Image 1 (cartoon, rainbow, N blue to C red):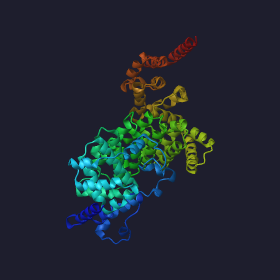
Image 2: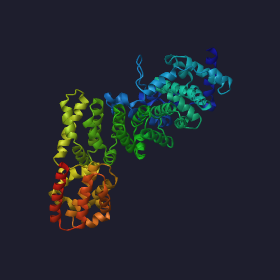
Image 3: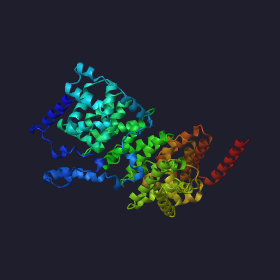
Image 4: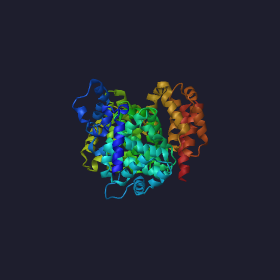
Length: 543
């Protein structure tokens, strides 16, 4: 003990020598953001103008991440990457169970010392950190957090055994969870080495051991969100690419843990924007579709989408990625209150953030009405839930969507259905009045709607979608004077011909009708013949 205290004193004197003088920010330990607390000498305004300029970003960040400014208490806990095991309770996830097992390991640090893999100073530090309970480690980090950080990093770099790496990463993560201001030691050590703190850990994301990868991801998330400065390129892109790969992975028992890292990152506007630029919404939407049966993961992914809705520009991205229909389906199928709450929060945020953009607001309203969200809201009201935030959101959405529904035309509904990619036999498709009045509008925006129909005919695997799409191509040809030439130009004729050999009988039938309409001009005769053929087909099916 005396030997270790003497070494700490010697190291402390060395770190405070003229050659390694600490700036006021570094002495303050680079205050963790989540605490929203600045050192007393900063709060008192006793700094010089230059020092004040340096600390202005810290003040700004501290204000920005005060949870009370933007996040509801019912959701606050889910924005932190924290241990999901309470004292006296069993671990509730595969990752927590693995962490509990690793904490019980006894590492033979003496063997590493004898083999020369670690120095005597490193041995002294790790032995003392290792032997004390989390509550009693505080004095070590308080007296010389920078040297402890240096010891951790050098041990990680000098030792290759996975079991020991797992233990060290868990020890670092536990230390940060106990007191987030300890992130300051890592930041100062990285600054002394002229590197970024994230770069100290990013190489461990490439390890083959799943636990090491995911534990490293937790530490990087904390460094990114609790440090006084933002994570910058290229570290940020590397980390976001890793998180996107995790979203795509299958059979990964630790996926929920790393998605929680994404929940934490997306609280920060700069990280949200970087994630959007990396096509992050596509990754979340694909993961939602692939993990519909995992309610916990579903909730975490929806939470990530909710974080993104705090930026007004994201509404257009949500429309282009068909997020609203997915939210509508979740409201229809899910019974878990926390999932319903966060889904409603997304819908409300989208409408509120687009209040100054009438076109986007109208399109959102149309999408929500088409996704039958009003019906889902009525069912939610009948459940007599008591959460005041949830009830307030329901009331807001019901009012907003009823107002939107008053101004929606049949063509607006058709466009929303078509852009969702989920076609069905809604009234507009078989209404001659609809096609007579609106066929000319299919030529707008460089034939956008026709191109979507052709795309669905070429790519969709759903027989219903194929049947409706090829039927609509035929209807356009019938009611548009230049329909045949335009459909040929956008590839519709070729796509319809390909469906003549489809395995589904109704797809073949609708494709045949569409092709006939492209070939003949006597629509009245063809219409009567088609009706007769359809009646015969129905009789044949019944018999």
